[in-house]
Length: 287
Image 1 (cartoon, rainbow, N blue to C red):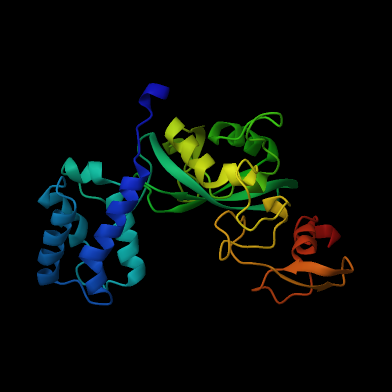
Image 2 (cartoon, rainbow, N blue to C red):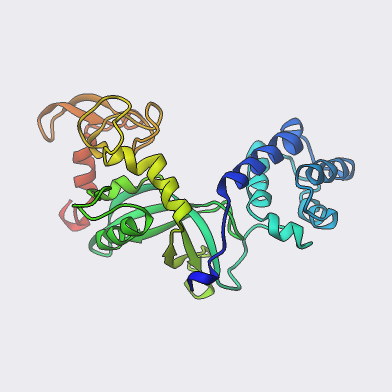
């Protein structure tokens, strides 16, 4: 199976995505795609992705005639074409995902993990962004056990507790990349899914360089903190290595009687982050 795993240059894909948006769509935001705009958009995209055939680009964009090119739509199209250049090169138009007809390896980034009660068991709700392939740029959800995530951690670059990059907490997986093998039989509720995973050495290196080295303190915390990232109040709005998006604010929580409890700034409820998580994991009948 390893020989069947394709190579993905995610840096190149990202650069193409940015160029497509800036050169093809940025000056056309909120305009309606008409026949004349289609011709010029095809021209600009062909200049941006020279290996793509003109007919494949035409058929990719033609379906949007009559639609308003909102920024959200333009970003999505840019993701789709950048993540499927091989199809355009082969003369095949890129379409939004409508089903998984064959097995396919696709690169993923784990955006967020959240502990939840899933069919009576504590699992982690994992949100994966698909970075390339037929389902790009969908965000899919998988419920995974702590044991399954420990296995993922070993595959994507963490080591045993005694190794160089010791794995300590599932939340340290936030932001990492890997490959997932998507198959038709795993499609549920109109959403693609995967069971088998892989992580080529180039992605392992990316994970270590971008997240794991700091989270395991092989490189120092840029904020000069000594505590683990999972205990940090900083969000990604202040630190790229953070495991949650916004920086917590400190206040008093009556539930745990803590004067320095952490609260999410967009949550005006009375419970701190820890108490809210505990409440959400309680069985419904006991609430």
